[in-house]
Length: 210
Image (tube, rainbow, N blue to C red):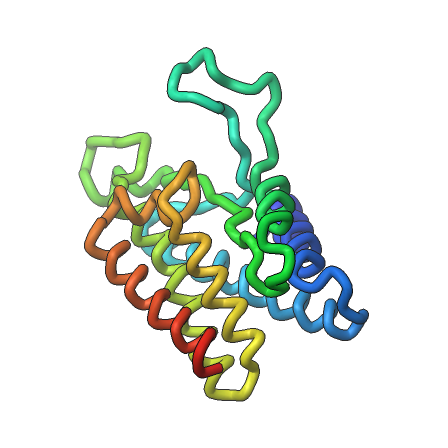
């Protein structure tokens, strides 16, 4: 279900973000953050892959890249910029005193319908793309998994694991570029609004209660 490139992308993002969350912490602290983040990202992606399967599709996860710097087609970079790596570093410069609050939206996914999708659902008619609503549901499933993990972390006494999942859901809900939040926003605005409300409730708990 996971190819080597996807695994390496998840591990790379986990290494970078874990370090930025506590750059001067000890080895044990870093290991806990790394494992917590890797589990959170892995289950987020796994959930989206399972939901995509039920939509007769598959997703490929990769590091978020930026190809354009403006709205015109001519405003593009010669080579794609790895935003999923650069933005967390820039974000950390502005929020340096706050250890765990690090930009975490570093992975995006492409959706590819299975060959039998259109034939099974529409007879002889075939389509080459997924509906925006379907893609939105796939992206939303990953957010819901992170919120579920946040609750599990809170109930079993792992506050840092709970916070990591709340923050990961928060950053991935931002509706920009090809992030999950953008897919959910244009796929189902009501669902996006509902998830935002849940994440802000999680924020309140993570800041004032956990």
